[in-house]
Length: 153
Ligand code: IDP
Ligand code: MG
Image (cartoon, rainbow, N blue to C red; front, side):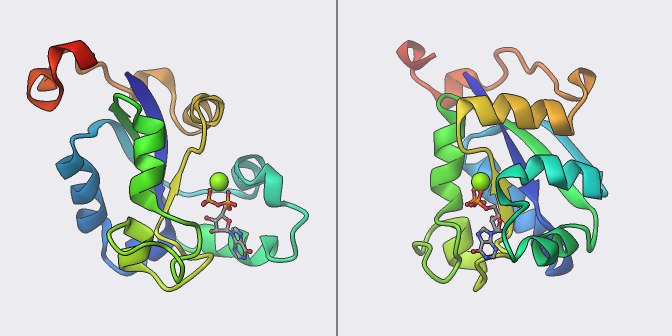
């Protein structure tokens, strides 16, 4: 069982797509084990997008990520990190496959609806950055027998 971070970006909030995007992850069978609205800051974005701070588009990216609060989610499931990336789709919404969130809901390379952790290491680091331990909940066996075969758990 893995946990991964998803951020619903300001473009999702502004376009009133929160319910639709949350619905996609829920319907897939990923369990929401943490969820909160928060305003991002210069400091947290410099950490979160450390690999991009020197890119010419970083100031625009930062401003777009601070335009409204975001919704941070911790999603849980077998292989959740890879599954969430797959559902999210390619970074640029214009090139993302139809059926993926970015492919279905955006036209932008930057305002691309969601962030999703890209590796097990990133998931641990990012969940620690966005959530306190007590903000992530242990759901135990709830619904697992409906979501998986016994030998998948
Ligand atoms: P990812 O979100 O698919 O993991 P990253 O390369 O980690 O993609 O970039 C993080 C975010 O930075 C993207 O989701 C997008 O919002 C923005 N971004 C990445 N590359 C570009 C670019 O070339 N132009 C503008 N924004 C970009
Ligand atoms: Mg990334």
